[in-house]
Length: 318
Image (cartoon, rainbow, N blue to C red; front, side):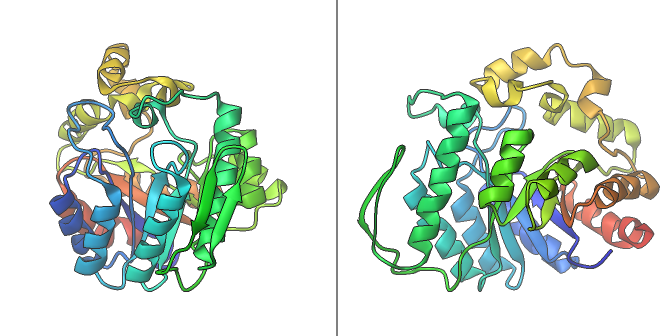
């Protein structure tokens, strides 16, 4: 393991903007150089309780923690916000980070993308929209004037005057063969959540050469029972199967679905409690599956204790 392999993921569903700024600076203060922030319009449930605009939070973290490498985990640049606007936002973030910024992208969830009243398209169409959105953004990042008339997007006489000094790396997230192939074809890297070596191999076999990044959850606490309660209270949706995370429409409906999730299903393989070996084993599973970098999401408010615990007790074991 090297210092570039373990980062911190901050949940915009759990934390307001000032907390995201403070926790980003806190991560840097504990020696973590990589921070990713989730991009949601809604939380998954009311208990999580937050949904700040990720681009404002990223600007604040960049100012509070200079030198930290930032990214989104992940943004949907297809429906709720036009890809030309995401291109401008990502360009600004890249400049604030002196180029140390990546844009994680995905095809989105209905939870966030239905809010303007747009039709929620099927998965194949969402992937086609994502591919064209990436094309639009890369054109704009050149700083040239762009006119684009595609199947899904139109851009007319648009130019980013505050263009990034170089192309922003785009890491495409995915969970199935089609998204893995898309990531290999048009992405600069691949993002996914489970430590599955077959998924990494599928991306590599499809021609993907960029970094593979993961977003494991964890819940450090001095008492394992408290940690389990925190996971069940805040992230019962982690126990939902299949495509429900992409298809359910509102936090209220997610809460209804989560009434069927048991405690063991909600916790799953998430490392919980104070045993450093349990947490180290979770990270090892990603690295052994072929991941290049992981961003650990500490569930709950105990961010400082988590950072100290990982720095002093977990990372030395890996």
